[in-house]
Amino acid sequence: MPPSLRRLSFLTPGVQRQRQPLLLAATYRAFIAHTHFGILERQPPTLFEIIFLGTSASAPSVRRNLPAQVIKHDEYRFLVDCGEGTQRQILQSGLGFKRLNRILITHAHLDHILGLAGLLSTLMRWETMEEMEIYGGAGSLDRIRDLLYGVVLRGGTPPMPLHLIPIRSGVFFKDADFSISAFPVHHRGSDSFGYLFEQKGRRPFLPEKAEELQIPPGPWRRELAAGGEVTLPDGRRIAPEMVLGEFRPGIRLVNVGDTGETRSLEPVCHDADALIIESTYMESEADLARQFSHLTARQAAELAARAGVKKLFLTHISRRYREKDILQEAQAIFPDTVVARDFDSFIVKREEEALPPQPSAG
Ligand SMILES: [Zn+2]
Ligand SMILES: [Zn+2]
Image (cartoon, rainbow, N blue to C red; front, side, top):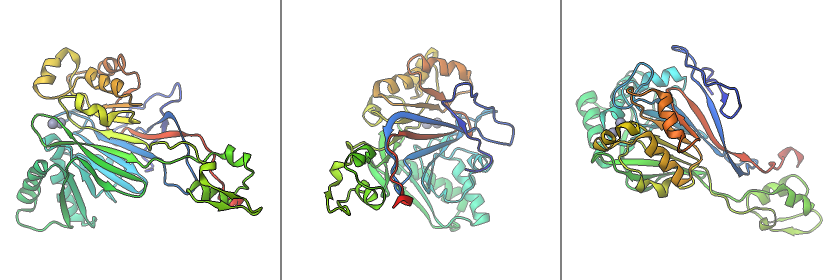
């Protein structure tokens, strides 16, 4: 964690969200979804981290920059959208540009892509990045191609291999431990996609079962936790089924971007641990929301409630409203709502239920 990010416990009573001091530290808020999940020794970290770099809708305000978030998992960092000025937000957050070479674009409205031009222009001077991948719908990439190759590069070559990768619905990025899939989003005729970050499900190791069976601590437990059969020193053979609990789906983080409707999003949001979604309007101007294909805070909260998500993050905030009014409107429907601010950071994870097998004991 960069030193400028301060960690605050989101759940601790009495902890206030800190205002961001000018040009200084970002606020760090953590939340733990109250579900149970075993974290086992030598298994990848079971969490995602969200850092909001820009939370404004359409135009920047004094306090909010244009849309951009970083989603971190293990060594991976994904930038989702890149509004104008994002490179400065990256600097200010202390994140740095290292390994920030995968960019996911929800759609090509200018408030979500103009920052790509500045970012590329800076990287042309520094040449610090080995490769850059920009993912988005084919229509979005057309506009991004115009911006980067037409305006920034103008016939020149990019400072690093630059890949514009068109996506369709479904999984488009996969590692051993997690995947990212795209799903269509309906927003003013744009070629919009939302992103589902999903950790692989697994069966948790149950130490009490291991105790019952008198399995000594050490490599046998680790092997069982990894799904292998073992033969104990006393000759007994133990199958993993004997010490593993029910299969549990992995953590799911849904990042929608701008959208004009919520019905089609319910299946992908179902039981998600966290949902990041726009909240451009309030219910008093629901007709404008409809006209411009955006959501009200209430509509976003209703989706969260219907889909049974655990935590709702509202972003794409208009300066026409007060933050506390937006929060109030949403919390009346879905209490576990946060109105994100620039440089807010959250950890999305689940409470541990199993003690990890101790490698030192074996
Ligand atoms: Zn937008
Ligand atoms: Zn838009």
